[in-house]
Length: 292
Image (cartoon, rainbow, N blue to C red; front, top):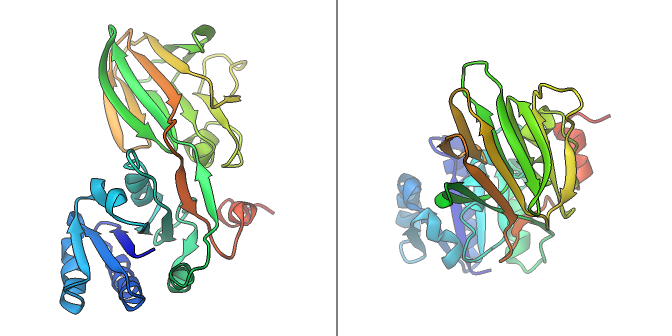
């Protein structure tokens, strides 16, 4: 690993200071460091120290020019990077500068030691996470397409009117629900919105998806776990008010009645999450969700 990228939580002075310290470690180990254009102020400070070893690129190009990306922030910052792994997947090491942090597994106190270990040749523990490809179609025409790390959500607007959604799996009708909305979650996202909606916690490397209704009208409508090899289609069959499609809480598109959301596993590659060197997944659950 000779080309290290850094992504910093917006307007977070502690994250900027930590990034500068880690960039200095990387340069001392013979690496070139890359910063996003949105972190230009921090990158200028690093450039003054190491003018020949610092480059600034657009965030969407970061995975194409680096061997490792270090994210300093929370899960939202991490997701903004993970969702750009379309052409090439590189390991992403998340250093938690926020609160919960399931994707940013490494504590800020562990950041320097973890980075040095990787640069000294220690093989990282990589957790490979499935990505989804989501397409919104309207009368057969593609309106929007995007990647998903955590979850796909169809939800109603502020007015309390339930919506109708028809669920098809591999071209066959599975269910017709009336609810406030629906969540299709990856195992990675099973500890996010899906969990709050009553969905199960799925070990992140399992080849599965969760389909969880949000406040369904019928109590018999329960979350389902299915293979991630299946093709899911969600048709908005009843729209009494404003309805939104949201991907990972980052992209949002308005839906109209008859719209179809197509959800498939992204086949090209998986997301490579650099795991914490001191805690496994179950330790994270104990810490983050107060298990036990």
